[in-house]
Image: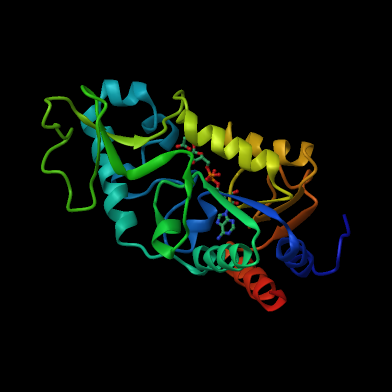
Length: 254
Ligand code: OAD
């Protein structure tokens, strides 16, 4: 793979001519919307908590009040945020890719729905969503987009508790979504990973699958990650500045 002086132009040239594009995003894509990344320190009320300790089935079993309050607060915070230029650029790339008859699959680890609010379609939400909650008694899911629950833990009509429909540490991904993501990684000719620390599996395993199947691999991240040495093109930049430049170049090629 060529290592052009301008990795953004090289990335855009590859993306603009690929037949099957797969993108994996993480919390870094939403950082410029004002949503703290997963590993940023928690602040205020939550500063003494480690997010990896709140995001487990055990934490919910031990203290459902605390865990549901934390997730509901995240839901309300995220609802008040807006998609940023990184989300919008991915919509532009999706549209120009589809317009020339190529396929585009967006896989996200984010639970904030900002890709969908920006206009991305068919998003594979690997780790679920803050807006879908599941009854612990029936397994039924319901969408919550309104105000805060009136009590914590919230009680479902069936008498169970509502738990957030996110994937916690130690839980399995949804089978159908995991299979679709794996297929999209395996069958793409370009795999673009943006704003993820590339350490949480199985999401972090998608890039090696794409690489093993011959895809060109591109990473956009503010910092170096374990993936940076393994990708064909590593772009160290903010998602909200690099992606719009790529989208503009891809649109100009169309
Ligand atoms: P992390 O918080 O682990 O990583 C965010 C990544 O984004 C880091 O590599 C940052 O360098 C990068 N970053 C931050 N701001 C950026 C910006 N403006 N532009 C580009 N890059 C930026 O978040 P994820 O990788 O998404 O899973 O975390 C993966 C999973 O870990 C989460 O989905 C969550 C957590 O465990 C579950 O809850 C199951």
